[in-house]
Image (cartoon, rainbow, N blue to C red; front, side, top):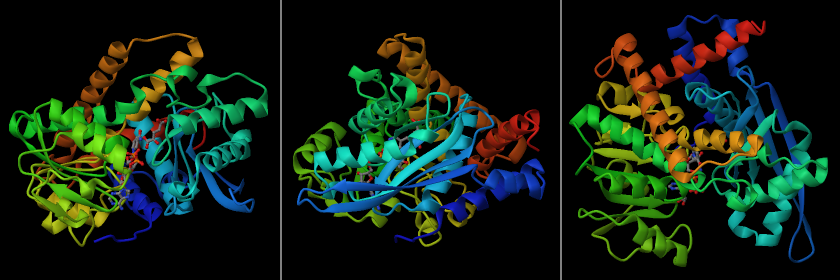
Length: 424
Ligand SMILES: NC(=O)C1=CN([C@@H]2O[C@H](COP(=O)(O)OP(=O)(O)OC[C@H]3O[C@@H](n4cnc5c(N)ncnc54)[C@H](O)[C@@H]3O)[C@@H](O)[C@H]2O)C=CC1
Ligand SMILES: O=C(O)CCC(=O)C(=O)O
């Protein structure tokens, strides 16, 4: 059941657990919970009928102790300031855990992009980026794609920034098209990262991922590429859903065939894919009888109302914040392994970093090199979190999830950087 929880409150609850593990004072907790800067902008768009519609957008810069702010921008009718604040905080932990020289930020515009045509979308994107331009920069804050934004959006962002500043700075956004300094790998890097850590976790639990059944919620950038790479690794993707509902086939889906179908039919139409045993709801997908569950859509879909019914032994969080803290407690007791978002979906920002370095050096990197670097980093990061979890927090059967281990490593590093800077 869709439960509307406040994402920022949920993110703070997670931080409370981590702060208690690390023995942080109330003052340090407050510093970490509070974003450094919140920018709200109004975005006028001249609509096709000549009327002017005003949208609201945000850029939240959570913490810059480790370096310039970094994080994506989402377009969604559901987004709000609380959600963007939570996502910005998670970016700080994600970048820290990944060992990147970045702080955390996130942006969002409250809009249903499917109601706008290309020209309206271009105005929306350029006007948003112009409005936040004083607060972004190659050494200040580097946005990237997230839900309902893509390389084309990044191209508009880049152009708006360069027009406003008069500078040519490809590194001010990542996830760009190839022609504008992007990498082939960025489009699939989050999914490849999710699949890589799923494989590492499956190896720990079952000795391998071959033949393991998977359910994936969300069939956008992250969901589709995760499905594609998991299938290549020998897993069987038996359930897929998007915003309108899902499909089940015990023989397993070919993610490319489903993708081809929805490319023709339109986003949101997974449910109409013909080659299925049965149609399922999103709730049924989350509680389906599979080994591995990959939520790759929105926040808090696994919550107190359905956590008891989750049958998967392994949850790999493709989405940001898909599991509420209450659900997490239930799942920990059920001995379900949760590979947390800040680890599992960090492949996107790791590849963004490679793109940013490349842009700044005026250099180049082959697809194979970038891919190998990413998979190595994901595996190393997974092992670091797994080892901390087992050695310091009791691992599977203990009282804490892998998220607490991941956050403890990440937050500790941010706190040390803040101390070195004399902030605390
Ligand atoms: N794109 C990226 O590189 C990264 C994305 N993420 C996270 O992954 C998640 C998905 O992002 P993308 O794949 O980029 O977005 P996307 O816009 O490409 O796809 C989102 C998918 O989720 C589905 N969806 C939306 N609301 C839903 C709902 N209530 N129930 C079920 N399905 C729903 C949509 O129909 C679509 O299939 C988000 O939480 C995002 O923050 C995290 C790291 C990087
Ligand atoms: O690639 C990036 O800079 C950020 C991607 C993002 O928004 C995320 O990891 O949630």
